[in-house]
Length: 203
Picture 1 (tube, helix red, strand yellow):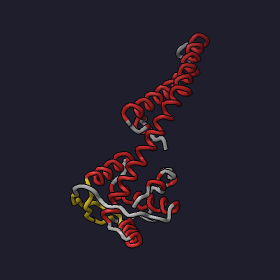
Picture 2 (cartoon, one colour):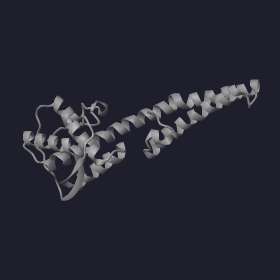
Picture 3 (cartoon, helix red, strand yellow):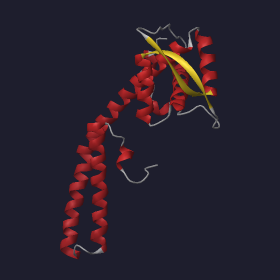
Picture 4 (cartoon, one colour):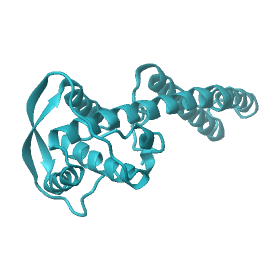
């Protein structure tokens, strides 16, 4: 299934994160995939901090989004050695995959292998774009803001004293700015998700 042209038009924020109206018990299903396919499922799970059932939900959602942009789906096959592995998958996702492969005249293994590698690729590309934006934001906005905050705090210490509530409040602001800067640096250098760098929820 050659979907590369359509993938270029897809933005991950437009891809639904799940396809289930209500939570349901997953089932065990075995897929014979390439090493790249299995690795892609693991990458997606770790990248989004989700379990494998949610990974398969996203594969179906991604295909549905791509299908909106391209009615012509070309053939695809798995290249190289394949191995069997059993995964947990939501029943609705399994039913959707069955319907899709019948329509596309392909197999479940080929569909999952291809869509997993495509979602991995798309996620990696989006991640690189975001990191580039983070680098720009850090340099042009966060660091100047931090420097200005430190300058303001020094003036407050001089005018009000270091133990004044206003000075202490400004110090808390500066600590938060510093934490944002560190979080961005860790994301750029190590790929650490921004939200993992804070002791409180950002959602």
